[in-house]
Image 1 (cartoon, rainbow, N blue to C red):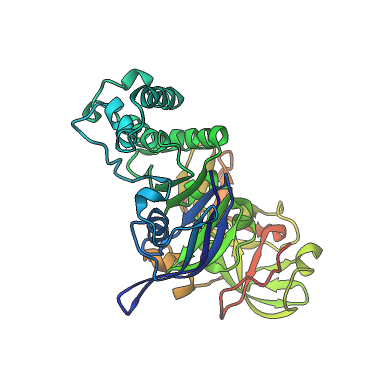
Image 2: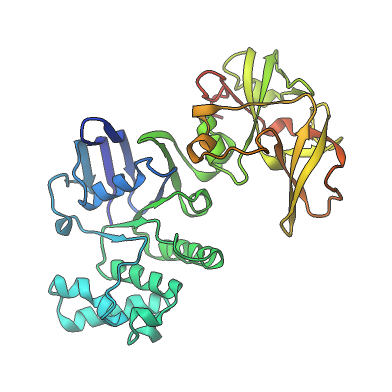
Length: 384
């Protein structure tokens, strides 16, 4: 196992396409690091540069203390798991697992011991004589992971390994990956566009956009203290709601409601007054008068979604101004424009009685609001 260090790493395709822009980071020995962002943000390019499948335009990549920029993939001591499994269809599971050891000319008895150990570790010991076509998607993914593990690499690279699995199996495989990493402690860099995977798997998460780092932090801090509107809108499902407001001496006027900020947020404010973008998570709205330190506002329920333990509702609020953030929002990257773009998404307990067309009084949890600069999109709350 080893750390992976990126120092001022840049990757350009031709003269005009900047895939990665001045990326600097150290992935600690044994850390599970997530690279997340929308399509085309540079996350897979970074992974391929570590693996040696893409050249570095400028900067340095080190694995342990070794500079690997000019080393071929076979000399980097990394193992990569791809989205499409890349199993050899004519080989059995045992032969697929043993293939990288055969290439390294590992002695046959030692290779067999390693293969059986990894197969038992991943719960595929009884599948060793089968061929990939006889396996389920989850079993194939375990074989792909096993083929990487059997090499005993210093670093484990994963490029969206769960994206081809159905929703139920993805949840199960996420739990298995967490358990596997706790047992083995292999330094892991994991690429995904799925923010749920990012939040559940990573020790730290790197949020990328257009090749530029937006924030590097723990999942909890990304969710509760996003550095800008892009991170705030990308992390969390459903996404954060954004409202236009004005700040004056610790109180935010939203037009149809006023939010008195608690002292702990006032102490973090980078300026006392002015126009602001207010971010509110769907779960931080309450039926009045349950929310602390905010005046209630009226809203009409347009759509409800029953999700078992909770209900999500799209509501149209009177007097509140929805902030349309254009190029600074995560939504613009995914082109999510619809007739519901002028509504708020609110999350309630499933026991809450409500129906489409009903008018309700809502309030905002002032302890949880986020404030952003309308010009730059950067957070106006200093780090706690």
